[in-house]
Length: 45
Image 1 (cartoon, one colour):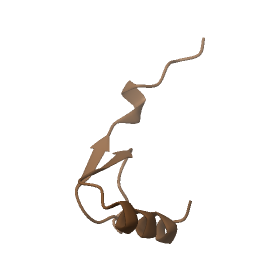
Image 2: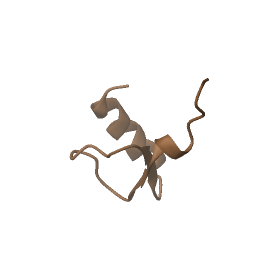
Image 3: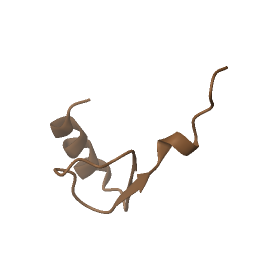
């Protein structure tokens, strides 16, 4: 999904916050909640 499509979708659903796995892009607007995804990954051995 492109950034423009994501922005359009966010306008339609108007979320109170957006969860971003990893580092948010500078273009991202609103209440962004960054989450470290590496703590949720399972290591394959």
